[in-house]
Image 1: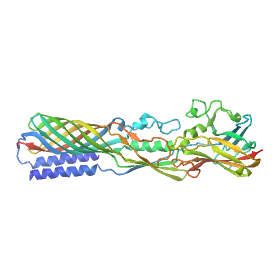
Image 2: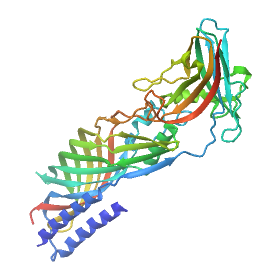
Image 3: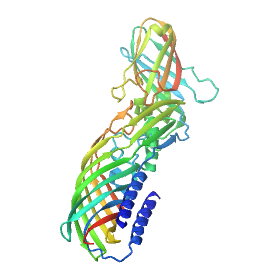
Image 4: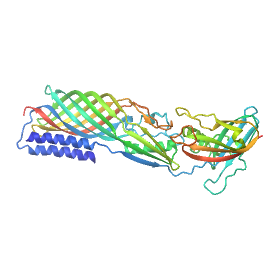
Length: 214
Length: 263
């Protein structure tokens, strides 16, 4: 009887241990910490590949994002020559903040002597951060008006996804006949859904430039 | 708390057996036994580490060795069957068949979720862990026994054998701008390897038939996991495709054994 009870106890203990080792699914939700990141300024700068002195720079600026004030589009103008090819770069800035090189955690993101159109050297350049996050970002262009058939943009930079996908911070612009219109530039944030198209994800910015081909 | 409950159960079972013994018996056994054991296990090394080395924008550094070697394993439990047959008073052969289970630690789960949220720069991530690191091990080997008294003895064991390890399933759902951008999953994976265990048993004979064993064991294995990632469309953050780190742990357990030999 003693042996029987002992074996039963051993068996019961084994069963209890097995059940106790079972594991439920665990889940945690991690929200973003409160932040105040802004993209206040988007610059599109293009250089004629055949005539480097032919440069056109356009600035779209909204220093109070979230407010009802309209963005400053007085410099959001691009002027191209017909039948030309331009190498273009997108610059994304946060002019709501300034930084001193090496003294803040954004120091590494700031290009020393950033002087495009005489912007202060302490301007926070978000472009470098977007470049670091290029694997889930995509810049898209949409032309309306007369330029829709006379101007095309080809992204020339690629991310490190497998396979590589275009990013759009570096671009080539091809022009044909004189015309005017509007270029919409959008930065798409596509976390884990980037597939080379502009559809997935959300917009980090959506800006417009007035364009003329002369 | 769970482990304390288990220890209490084992102890209560053992004491009840002792209480049923109506006469004092000299154990006189030769040390051979078969029984069950179970207890608390603590992972060690990189497998236990909870690492989140960030780049300057707060995301995982994809190539950082610390990020890639961390296993985020939390404390767990081990139980199993153990037996040995002593061919002399001091030397025996035997083995262990055991099952161990280790969750991803709470801090590790928080770290994983925060790391993926920052790496994808999104509003929210929901990280779900399904299953545990689990190990089935079959470990034969040698036992050395030293009886201090009729009732109390110590055993040293050195075992080597086979283990089969399963990793947990890690799913991360990404939300941004009010949009659910879907989940990517590091799928559970099974790998096998050689394993070694060394340990010390302190054994107390409760009666002529039963003994209580208190043991501490060190376990080592190094399975090479080749991990599949489902719906992982962006090469961002901590992306593990192979995990080849030592899986080591210390186990402290209580066992109940049926003893053989002269009654």
